Image 1 (cartoon, rainbow, N blue to C red):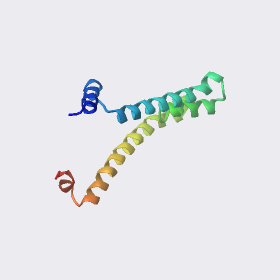
Image 2: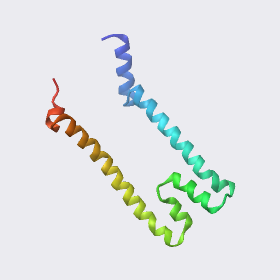
Image 3: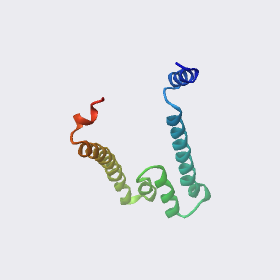
Image 4: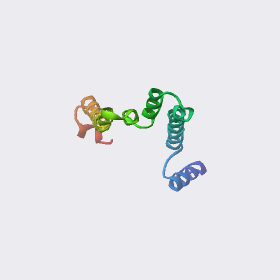
Length: 112
């Protein structure tokens, strides 16, 4: 084991993630923070209700429906349900494409 291998494995054990994963998580957190700030800016600026609803929609899918109020607020649970279905479909598509590319899931999981 070289010094570099030891330093890498010690850092990985201490933080539970490698440098690439850590960089991607930092970038994702930064993008999400910026989106939240941009989404809340119309509320702070006192913009018209349509802009506020659009900004709150950046925070949470369907939050603009709640901001509008009235019968439109009933679309919020539907939006969250459809968002959940889209996540399931996304993971299913990844599983299906891997299965069809390899021929079978058992074939892909075998290591040489």
